[in-house]
Image (cartoon, helix red, strand yellow):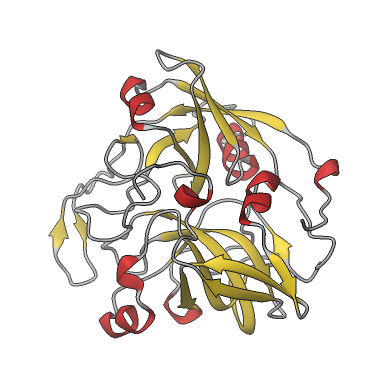
Length: 296
């Protein structure tokens, strides 16, 4: 097991409510090919799309798997401060507990963070989702912000519960951290999220509009919850192109039709000096790693 500073991390409660789907005033979205379409998007309880399902092929745009949370309490002195705390402090693998509604007491897990809309995505078993309704409250035990790898400090960690790190169980070999991933992705096709000043909230989109690149890298079977390697991407202090750098993310929302967008990735690891070695493993998906489903 890697040595970490987990004994110095703060575990704190944050809360959100199951948030309604939203649509912009334009209603139509214009695809990268110039076609106006109307499609489901962010928010809500997505009954038939969870981590482990394909990220592409749906009649959808930016759909979030499972149950989407947002803290809509507003403080006039600091608008959206509590929702921002929910998004920044929640980490992949954190425990999420329903604290209000017919599903009170049921537990799930944080599986994604979405930028712009600032949602936190949580996975619950299907029978629990059937009991949930919009505006039910879900509390997250936020734990992981500030996590460091003491054995290999050249690799920075973000948005990760220490327990999820343990379950992934990455190894150090020849001075590099070996991490299982389903795909290797070139930084050249990364879109929305590029240039952000930090990666402690939100996500970074894989654009899939070049069919040749999709075929070359086998991206047609990307799944929600996949761990993926982004090659030549440094996310130490935001998202930039840096030759030789390697970053690892988790796929957190579905494919998109809008130019510059695609399946989103929440950052988990990054090394600007290439101290990460991605190891291809088709089972490197949070649904398999945490045994969230019996059917994959």
